[in-house]
Image (cartoon, rainbow, N blue to C red; front, side, top):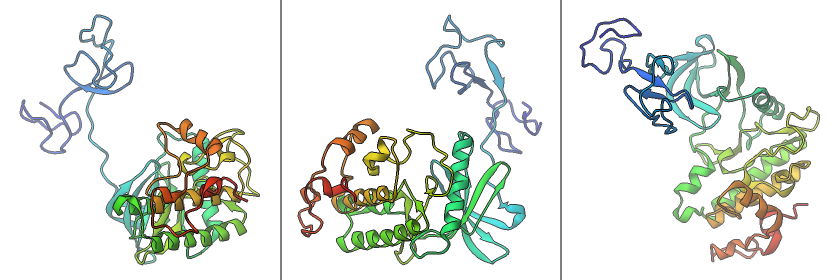
Length: 328
């Protein structure tokens, strides 16, 4: 059996090429969902649709044979060799992040390569705006600094400092009962307040403040990151009127209803985030986004003291002020 990639001859029963390591199993692409199925199959393992109306294996005209390909090899460097990759750190919905070494400035950095496969022009514009917003903010102890921004092979990238403490979302997930010690929660909230005050003084509203967007340095200093949805007051609006953007568990009512978003929205999100840090859950939960949005608009949150009895009276507030519904 000849490898379709490197043409090396392999044993008939071989599953992977002995030279390039690629799979030797042929695949059939489902004409309905485009999932690749290993031959032979009658039904698509992804969508369950038969390969033809008789529920039998399709003819060559109805199915497309594709030579299987393995995952793309991890890059060894970026930006013409300036950033040498040390190891892969992880990925989220928007980015793949690598530990890399800046050979020009001789320092280790986090290299965030933006995923563009499912992005439309508006989404890519928001990525550019994130870099612009951060560059405009300059250097602040409670805002993640952007060292560099560019594009390589059609993928925008950002060069960021290494933040060894992870994010607050991970901190909450690992904490006992998902509740942070009060001193730590209040310290993070104060730091975020400082970062927001600085951003707002520059005319920038974050619009997606949440635990996953607040990062911690090695000494525990909290820094706000991911300004991808940020709006500067003198920048053109790139979201269509009435479009909901943000994360619903921390979203203020006016943002959930597609209305005008001001710096007050960030204070509401911070209130919801502080609620979660001390109570172990956000102020509103539900089976889907619409259910949660409905609660933000119509339902006063219960006091976080219902979830944690040792809260001081200043944090154990009742009614709509608990999550900032009357954020003025």
